[in-house]
View (cartoon, one colour):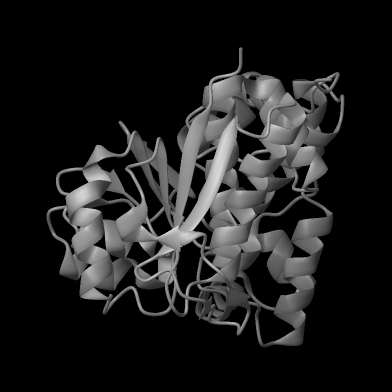
Length: 324
């Protein structure tokens, strides 16, 4: 018999809509796939139970007022645009009832609400990269890690910005019901499998800036399209018609990182995609991404993702079948 879990989403004015609907769709999809609508019995609640609007203007009608809700098996606190100055009534409810929930989860800046209620003291956590400095200053008793897309610390889990809440919800479904179901839901939602929690919040293209100078932008595009080519500073400088020294300085100034670091990140991302989306062997992937040898690629994966390429593929390749 399927274990049934009560899931409570906390709502408030100016909540981020995707922080709510993304994880909610994961749990709802899992219940449907399991053939039991109560496998994840999802409810929403606000302080007073009245209709509210998200930051984007979407109207939401909570199922209940928080005062009428028992501590759930899983409490989800989404982020929004008032979490840095939250409603004291909401913080008080979280402080009194949150610790009695089976698991406590925040999405994006929802971590501010958990921290304000004292539920993250002494724990490791993350939040949206843009708010990490403010969070660290406000809550020094929380061990903030700004890098991962989500962090698990016992019965508390926090995720980075917006769509990372989907990754965290999928991880919880996998914990509850296994990897195949989590991957089935990921495919149904057309998200590219489930990203590992220790994946950085930025891809190389997001972490870096787009160069303002056309010749440097062309070099960025060349790197992305030819990761197996000679991407040394000398070779890239030649493509930009600059001296190696001038090129390295200009690239750092306009892109925000050195050419070598940018190349490393693009190669790693390319390798991840090939491992997830193709049947190519590790040796083939290492050559296609410019690593030269499988051992060089293995060192890059372990250093950045904390896992070897073969293990990464085993955990995140698509499943062979879907549950009935």
